[in-house]
Length: 307
Image: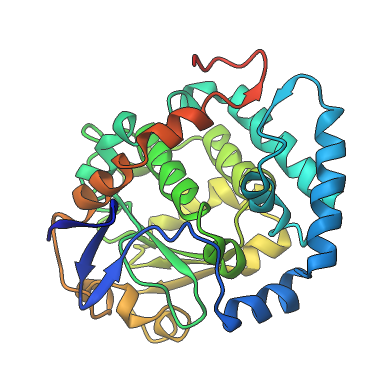
């Protein structure tokens, strides 16, 4: 697999698909209609949401964010269906999380989170599905070597991958599916998790990151996984719990929600197996390194990030 460039934009070819970060505004009728139907995205609501969110942010004097940047504001308004108060609450929670868990969020750039990608623990290199959704694929079983990729670095890699996808207007509208492969999960893996880490992850997903999480699919989980899920279960909302699906080794139901074209062969899909997937994705994201450096300068004025 190789990285190519078209007018300075990096992309890869995988399984007959061209895959790249699609950061330009969408014009396709499908997304226009989907955004209006599911997110209340009309010219009137967009204008009102942007105006009201700016007013709210102007009153949050200790928070440094690009208030005049529509692209930034839309990233939070879309998943909140253009209700400015909800978007404002999400922005505050997002940056408070970065403040509270600075050790997980400091220097969140591709070059500082190389391990999770180069060892192919985290990957989003797959085409969109028929509903326009992205797929985040995480290896948390036998291919995960915690000594090589500590749990903290896995989470940092997941943050970078989702942050990248959320720069895409089409993903903001259609959302993300997550597939977690737990084949070979062992007690030695589970020992790296704690209740406090589980709560942090759930809080991040439920209250902080502006993502439309459409489904979390657990595959190839062994019986011992019940011990791990017991750490997370007390913190899950009813809504999030309803979107978590357990498939074991049977991919029949998985392929009803996740396109086969998004999964590698070993997981029931049609994408070719490729050990370089994570490394190529990392190289693609490095193209946007300066954008990530700009983002880590945003937040509450007493944050620990240095710009």
